[in-house]
Length: 150
Picture 1 (cartoon, rainbow, N blue to C red):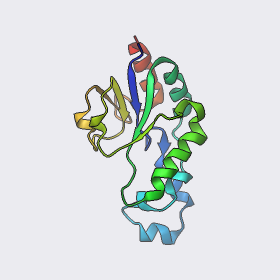
Picture 2 (cartoon, rainbow, N blue to C red):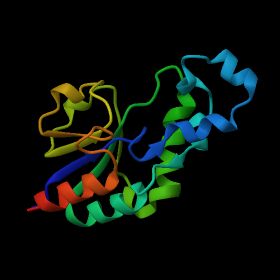
Picture 3 (spheres, rainbow, N blue to C red):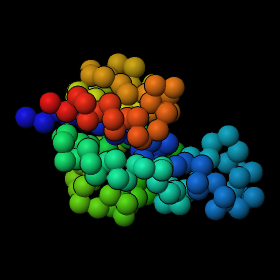
């Protein structure tokens, strides 16, 4: 039986900052300090370097799901995250997107996330802290997880 792996979207699969250059100065001003509330911003984001290839590799070895949070005050984010997964991950993400503000309600073996918010600190399983000194990029995460797959 494959181990269960959850992968966060924002700043793990998706490069949030890649969308900022697509915003107008007016949008940046109106949403200063809360850019994740800009309608449509999640549709503008590019993948994190190595994320797509790593995700595809991991889906062959783990029971893999996307576990992400969408801003409560930005309804388009919920749709945009689904469309992003369909566009960039295709069949690898088919019916494997879970949007929640309580990640700890999903039990599994591993969770790759860049933060400890939204229940990550209470996740039952191992939190792989993406972007940390131990796991600074996808190469380091992939090497670690491939050593743990069985």
